[in-house]
Figure: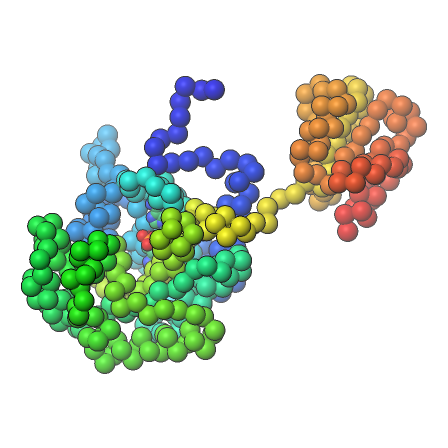
Length: 420
Ligand code: HAM
């Protein structure tokens, strides 16, 4: 054992579990690629100012959770806590938005937040995200909501809910915000919550404490305070979801931990990870973020699905994710001459599309067959000195133990036939 350990709040992704992660990632990205989203990759660190401006100065992410540091050259940078600000920054910088809109992008990668570690809450985690930039169209919101739901259902999850809300726009949200603040000022709240009510009153709605929730009876809700345009927009998103057979729950108290959201906001929550609903994916519209970053008006919508939490949700429901790659054959050489011949054969098999591995190291037949069993391959190919002399090779089906000798000259075609 090494004297070094992984940092707190992080974990190593090891085989065989790592295959489930790859399977989940693939299940999340394939539908995006098939729906016209193009791949984007941005650096894992960016200027600290981008996230402060993009995510919001008063959010928990910016005030408590960012990994920020000054480089040797004196630049203030931060390990990305989320992807939306970076993707929009990159799209604006490269002027990707000059052509026809929306520009639809997807990404997959690591994100960093200095969180208090608990099940499903890590300091280094993995998201697959999608951002559709430059169109104000309820069908685009619906597209992402439907794809997200299809992904979770396709993976076999059943015990999750989609919570949906609208946070209004620049016109109706400030009016609602004032109304909410007025209500909150009349409550018996501790100092910190009172402060929060002044800076970011919507976040008080999200307070999990019983004593706070009790006082929120009769609180004005955003759903009753949307302007006509926002109400109609939200109704259309809801109609499209219903038409597509996507079940959702209206949650007028749903607020998000990032400040850029306008109109449509949502979370896919699962109860099997911690016992209380935990977001396995989330997103929404951010119509004002481009201007916030110094760009033109660019109404946009997106989501990010948590890969780690989705794997935990699958475990909680007892679902297996189809493991990715499976070996077709494992070659077991008995003796030096066989080693040379078989190594060549493995290369030929690989070049003809057969997934093959080889018994490296000088092992006895027992240890080598054990390695073949453990490899998960369908067939073991066993070659000894006598086989070479007779121009044959032994092929053993590992699941059944059935073994036969076949002509060495025909082995590639024989294997290909068997794998059909
Ligand atoms: P978010 O809600 O902060 O949104 O994160 C999205 C998902 O990432 C969460 O639902 C969760 O599954 C996963 N996640 C977040 N933090 C952690 C953590 N500490 N440990 C494990 N998983 C975590 C965003 O990041 C937005 N950028 C989503 C978006 C895209 N909105 C518009 N476009």
